Amino acid sequence: MSSTPVATAALAPPPTGSAARRRKPRSRTAPVGALLVFVGPFAALFILFYLVPICYAIWKSLQVVEREGTFGQATEVFGGLTQYARVFENEVFWQSVGRVLLFGVVQVPVMLGLALLFALLLDSPLLKGKRFFRLAFFVPYAVPGVIAAIMWGFLYSPRLSPFTALTSQVDLLSADFVLWSIANVVTWVFVGYNMLIIYSTLLSIPTDIYEAARLDGAGQLRMAWSIKIPLVRPSLVLTSVLSIIGTLQLLAEPQTFRAFSSAVTSTYTPNMTIYATSSVPNVPLAAAMSVVLALATFILSFTFLRLTRRKAAS
Image 1 (cartoon, rainbow, N blue to C red):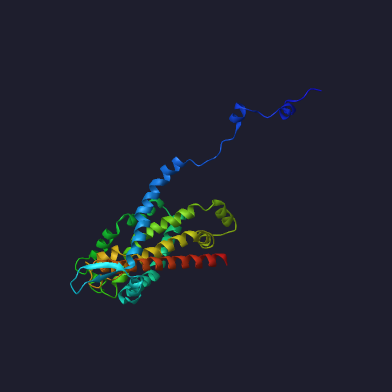
Image 2 (cartoon, one colour):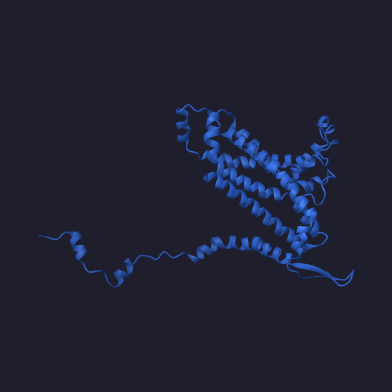
């Protein structure tokens, strides 16, 4: 009985010499050169413009300014946590923090509610001219924040606004209304940005789910409430976190409004307080404020994420 090719191959001795070297599997080692080429520029920029400034701010916040006599030359020496104690005793700084927290409690839900509404409208088959409305909703985000603040500042001004019937009756730049006037500018700018994030999530939902809902007799409103909104919850969480961070970093709009309203002081928001403190100059105290503000932003964002995850899991 003749042997088959399979049996012959099985009984054959293992290859030796050059044949064994040719058949040796290649080791999957990471190409170090390629990693350095692609990751190196990002790592260098990340370290230079992110980690180094953070470390410098922390180091600077541990310094104190000392003078020899009343008009002596100022020198910085190590002071431990002295500047952080001064931050927690600084009422102006914490008043600015409370102001932006009030701003965020009102402005963020309104902005995200409008972004969700516009995204649902764009995703609805009942809306005509979706390309036009998608562009119209997003165009304000293309306007720089300073330009938008200047434009709205003129619209709010009683002497320059074309809506004098309103601005002559209600001073939108007064101390009672200027915070909400700024909130309107921020909402106008960032609704389109958040809308696109939510709308992209809506586009990724499988159409089979909608077809099954239609077979069950669900209308557009029912599908939006029971299907679309629950499925875009991760996008809502993401936009909420970004909005919380942006709220605590509010700077451009109130800084621009100082030219239109005397109610906006140099310490109106935390970032404005930090900038004014560094201009005194008291850079160590400003650095300590920056570190405290960064930690507060992290704690608020992390707490919000934990609460939303716990609610989603329950």
